[in-house]
Length: 345
Image (cartoon, rainbow, N blue to C red; front, top):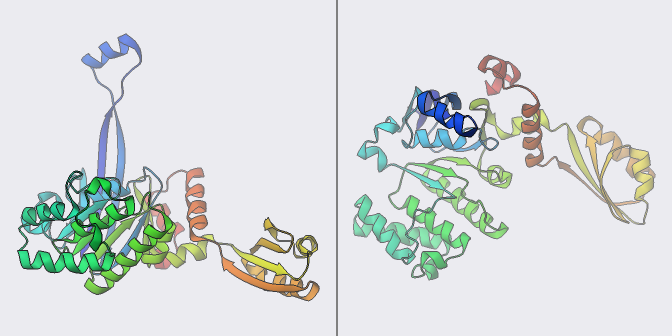
């Protein structure tokens, strides 16, 4: 049985549409008009135990709505789902002890208590035995390197330190499924890297099923081999991250360093799109099929000191994907399936 299975999950919100002016307010008292917004529209997927999945989409695509339904915080308008064999919105006590939801923009710890006391309160809520609590906290504190911060008030912790404490709180009861909604939002580069390394190591060590939403493509690249992409409440891609790159990254990036100041002549001879130029270096965007020919031409005609060929950053690929989706009308399920590679259907 998959750890997580969603079948046709749909969530429709009725939003009151008020007419302008006093007359509109009076009309609203007598007859209200509502608009229907489909935050999730027929979402279906399966996730196996131990998988680390990236859940991508632009703002308002429906990512958080789906996570909240899988965590049992929202009841779907239509569709079914199981998490570890439980129906999430039935909120069975046994289910609540086996998953955790961490939202980067929400505080789960008590602001005016030291971190250790906040964790003690969580221990009491989950009725965790004292010996298990000490063992779990000790291991997580060591992994995250926050042993000297346990007696600090939560409100006095830095954002990175607080997020580490939030992770400890989320994992305190040793859940089998972890939902992460923007866990690195607002963190600096070092804190992001530390959180990623912890999540990677923890997932490998405990095989915890993890679903991650993030706008930082560095998180997705570092942690997720498979991604699910959602837009306008519909899933239009489910497969390996490399498939998105192969499909939408039609160019490569060439970085050239010259022995002398000759980059202008190199641009003229290679025909690539100029991205950046200094007196001795060039960064060019070159069509993938032309990379070998361009490199041979430049190396044959110019004194190149160093040359580096890179893939288009995944963040740029995803941005291009969403931009193309924004121009077109949202595809139906059948249209989306026809547009995908066979391995992603």
